[in-house]
Image 1 (cartoon, rainbow, N blue to C red):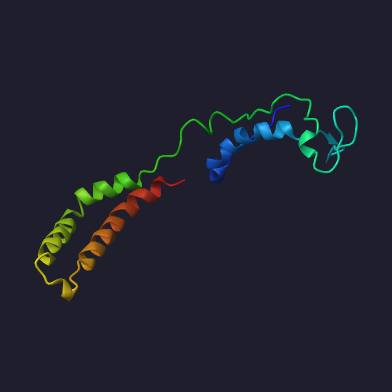
Image 2: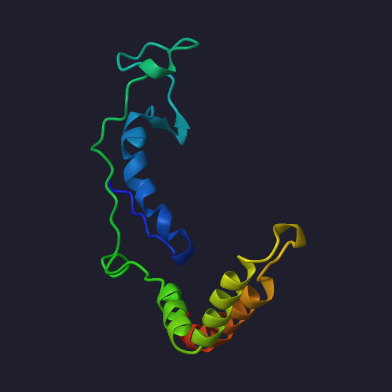
Length: 140
């Protein structure tokens, strides 16, 4: 008897659970009318605390049959590549302004709490605006 595991897109990471639980399924007690049997292999009744001694099912190890097209390729996250591309091209001036700000505040008294928050958020906004139109069409 084979158990068929068909992963859905949102359970893609859980498809290995079928393989993980295969030994557990084999060790379960046999079913009698859909209810686990509490009888030993010799027909005697299992007492309290003896469930680990219940005779395992007399069947072969379950196997997972996963459709080959679902495992053909793992999803690839292209967002990081798009972000690096945008940082190097469209947002290069913002990165230069941020680096210049970092150099400028090195000479400022720390008691004045210098920061480059505005330049940092300008970079993040620029990258988001650049990546979004390229990323959305690739989503399924």
